[in-house]
Image 1: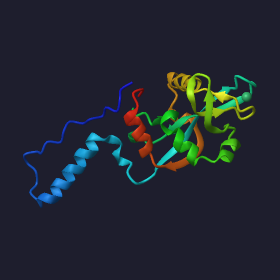
Image 2: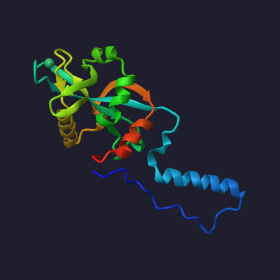
Image 3: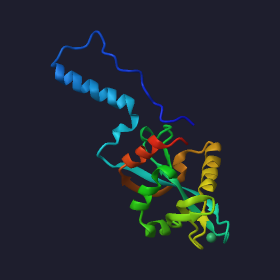
Length: 181
Ligand SMILES: [Zn+2]
């Protein structure tokens, strides 16, 4: 996948520019240039509307049917690949901070929290089985997500019905550092 790579052509001033107060034009130009360079910059102070996306699976440990959070559905303009999906690794911290475990439980979603994992030093924020709390591994969830996408089904079909409003700036900072997207 490509890195955060949506640079638009630079906004060179056009010859027929309307005459006006220079300071106003220049402010507007600067704002346009900034937005062109940073497509995710629309998220400033306001909180973005997110919908929690889940995939269905069977617990490897107790074989109960489980529902795991795969990420968040957002305005496509706010997602790195324009798909309208933010993967769990980008939004895990804000989901842990914002989601009510009781609401998750009422929708048959196990707790999302930091967990130890044999394969990952220090563990990571992961889903668990709603019955036995066994870890539902991130790679497993990514596989299920990609299987869903391979069928051509829309992202919206993964909508769990849980809506939250969150500041995406921390996620975008992580995206800036990420080399895996
Ligand atoms: Zn289980």
